[in-house]
Structure formats: structure tokens, C-alpha cells
Length: 166
Image (cartoon, rainbow, N blue to C red; front, top):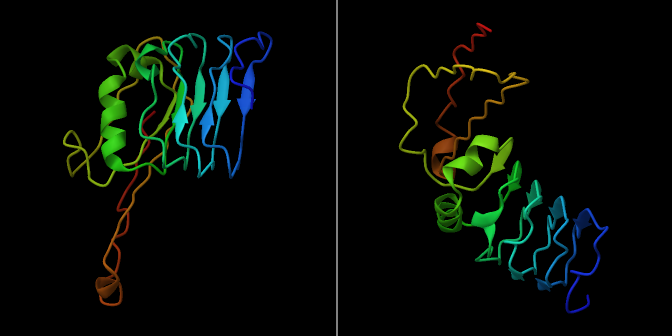
């Protein structure tokens, strides 16, 4: 790649899916709306993203060698952020850098973790629709991790009940 891609003013989507040898990406055009670097396992660093004010979709899934995303906290239009495949320590750092305003417009957020968050409690989980927002769907996911020794003697619990009162 050239030393900079900033001069590509008409470029809206930048995709490097499954790129196996790329280690870094030079400065990107300011008018990008989507960046996808999914499954770029050798990828180590990205240039400062703070000027990408209209970027709304950012995917770094399985780019596990990346340890910093400069300018992430300045992306005000970000609606989809995918960073699965990172270590959970990096995930905590990312969450701290994103503003509360960022989370309000977020549509999809995929960050790694290895523990149940403090705000989550066992028991009924309720959801209240927000005023002036249409609920288009709800995804419920449960992940259970067991040691190999326990699997033979343990039966996984079933989801007892899911009710829809919408």
C-alpha cells in the first residue's frame, strides 16, 4: 500500500478481508463510511482515525495483534463496532475510550470478554422500549464455558422461558 490513502476522496468503503500479510494501514480518507479488516491476522497497527467523522461501520474482527486504535474516541457517527477475537483487556480499554454518547447511537457492538459484566444479574431480564425508537429485533445469546473434565458428567442447563410482551 502507498504511504497514505487520504487523497482517495471518493472512497466510501475500505475492505481488506482475510489479508494475511498486511501489518499496518496508512492514513485513510476522511470520507470513509465503512472499514472492514476482518480476519487480517498479521495486522498490527492502524493510523489515527480521529478525522473519520462519518465512519459508521468499523470491523477489526480477529485482528488480535492490534493493541491500540488511535482516534476511536473521536468517531461520533459509529453505529457498528466489531472487535471480536481480541483479548478482554483490550476490550475494557476500548469501552473506556468510547463516550456514553457513542453507545446511544450504537446499533451493533461486538467486543470480547471473559466474565459476566457487573451490571448483569441472574434472574429475569427486562427491557423497556425507548420513546421515539422502534424496536426492530432483539438478540439473546448465552455462552457457557466448561473445563473438559466437567463436560462428561455435566448436562448444560436449558433456557427455561423467554416471553415476548411487545
